[in-house]
Length: 99
Image 1: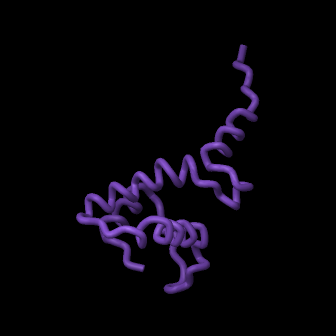
Image 2: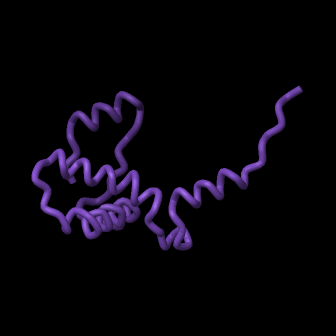
Image 3: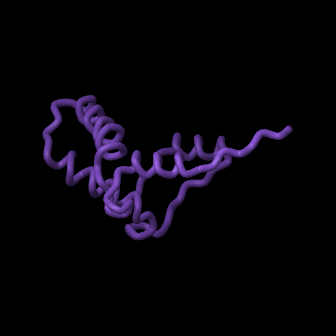
């Protein structure tokens, strides 16, 4: 897929490389493909946005408010990402400070 020159320059500046695979092979990044498919089916295709700004705002709210905090994910045992993160963080033991 198309990736901008600015994106490549930013990656290069930070010593990173883009994760790319064969053109047209969706299994190269299955998690991202799944997320964007869900985003389109649950939000984008159900609305007609009056402006690009309205679309961006709706997508940001969907991701930050609904998808990451409220939506149940089958891969997380039908828990929310926020809940799983909380379980992980509360299960960690603290490291004693050095004397």
